[in-house]
Length: 368
Image (cartoon, rainbow, N blue to C red):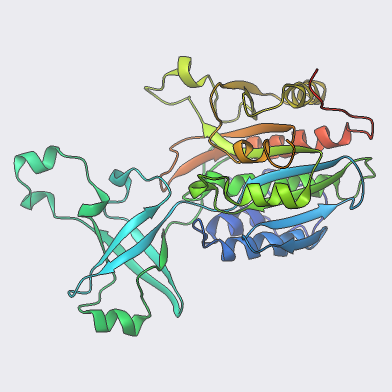
């Protein structure tokens, strides 16, 4: 197992052993609507080789080849699922709700970090002990409304002294870990790795003279983006000619997964190219052709209704934006230990960069 190597100082291209930036990004805290810390980490890295800015929604943008056309938008969302304090009990215990979709079973007993205005406050998620439950209670799945956060306070006054208020966001207090086989696990794989990949693709393009320009966007609020999240605003403001969205999809190389429904996608099997109603057929074909000629392994996933990613918002922005979706296989989605293969991250970045290199001013995505 190779340790993290020092930061590359903005040189184009990285290897699966050079993950110091990835670690910083995954360990930054940024639930939907409260992405500032993670977004700052992303922008600081991007500023070493690209022109960087942010917007009022919370999106962060990095551009190379400004003024060139066609302009390619590469989007990966920076937010993660989290928690939010909804009520303070007289006892000092805190009730909470989920920011994004949780399986409450994975929350029981977790340590949390409340991101208060006056500093981070550590707590634990409590539930009635199994010894005190009757037989019927033990058979029932945990519900968020039956859980609470304990920060050690014994009253509302003590909570106030700690700076904890209703509305404070929180994340599970879990850092990235390296596993065997070139894999990493983190609470924020979905989809901090998408934001990582689009910036790594931009890094590969930074010192090249392509006809196309490229802008990487770390989009905000995807996990709660029922109306498009930050992706809709970024696509409208940037007015790209084509868009590539990077997200995660379910790795199906674990027991009891219906491959007939979601396909066969394994860790280390390369990026997953989506075909469906929200993705443009010509963009898909160009991605597949680029992968084939570059020798990048990939699989294909059908998305007949919607993709449940930023692609759903981007492809209908303005007068329509031809959009492709490239996903990274991910085990244990929406848990504290989401797991991906590092090789898939770098292969996906290489594929995006190759797609951009192949574009010229005459490209036309108008459907026949």
